[in-house]
Each structure stands twice: as C-alpha cells, then as structure tokens.
Length: 128
Image 1: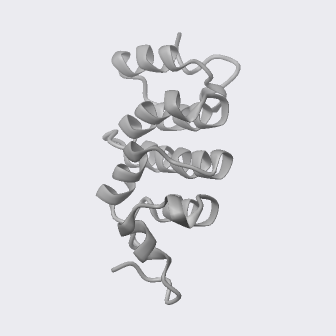
Image 2 (image 1 turned 120 degrees about the vertical axis):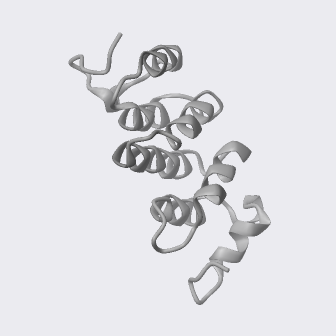
C-alpha cells in the first residue's frame, strides 16, 4: 500500500505498512511518521520515526521531527531511541529538531529527561 490513498500519509496507522513503503522508497515517509505518532503505541512508532529523521529529503526529515514532538505531546514520554535522534540533530535554535526539543521539554516530565536535555531546560533558554 502506498501513501497516496484517500486517508493520506498523516493518517498512517499500520507500522508494518510503513515498513513496506519505506523499503519501496515512498517519498512522504516523514509525513507518514506523524500518522504513526498519532495512531500507534510509542514503542511501535519509535523505530520508524527515528528512521524517518534520517531521510534524505530535508522537508520529510522536518516532518519526522514533528512526529517526535507529537509523540512527546501525546504520551508525555520518548524512547531512548528518540532522545538519541534529538541529541544527534542538536537542540540549538537553528536545528531542524528545535520544535521537537521544545515539545519534549514541555510535555515529558523533567525527571525522565536524559542529562543532556535537562541542561537545555535552563532559565536562559539556551542549550550548552
């Protein structure tokens, strides 16, 4: 199944289907990752969202980071894998992940954040 059907890429609900279209080289996988964040348990969506953050198309990577932020908003948590993609991308103000980092800092309890991300929550609002 492709992503161009009537439910749209953001309506994606099936992780196995996402895997199949990833292998096929579908173009809107970042957008589909948002659908996974909205519709699937975090543990199932996380590896696919992480994979989407490494897509070659910058716009689709941006949508994948939107999916990371969406997961943080909806679940109040992120997996270690998603924390790792945020750290790899960098939390600075020019990073493609800046909104996902902000959502994580807002919706994930402070005690559950990794130490590097806790440092981003400083009052000055700057990451080291």
